[in-house]
Length: 206
Image (cartoon, rainbow, N blue to C red):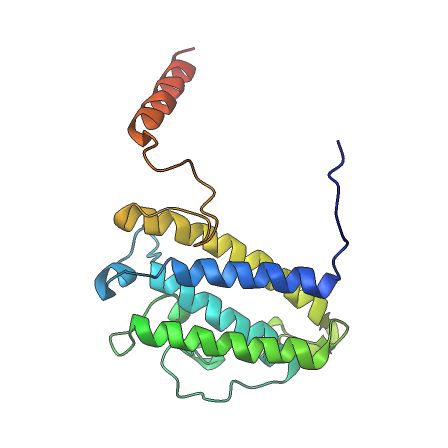
């Protein structure tokens, strides 16, 4: 059955809505997390909650700023990672340093969003740019439309990582603050996990 669309959205409005949703989810996952828990690696490759958010903020600067010749206006900011930094540390945007705080990260990402939104408003979807780290600009031109799709896709993937990392920290789950999209409070997660374990065991035995 084909879903019914009540009113068609303009492409720009649709992309902006999903971009805003991804950003909200990422910052929400930081709510109530202490400095240590935000930084602590949760996977063998060092994935951390603060690292996810710092990476996403710098992604937006790159794809909505440098790609279109717009430099980040305050390069001395905590949490900002210049392109040259990656030569010495390819993971530089994936963790908070001792000199940076979660509060500074939240403030930084809020300002990054304002910066990125200004690019979107000023240039329009047909604007053409080239990410300088992709190589020859003449061979790597992209539109702002392309970049919006790319960033929405990238942030959504990282928001999913943040979902899992936050659950590992303190058990908090949910899609976003206004629509958690999970069973009502009191759901028996232990019984659910036991059911899935039993299914897995039977599948392995068959």
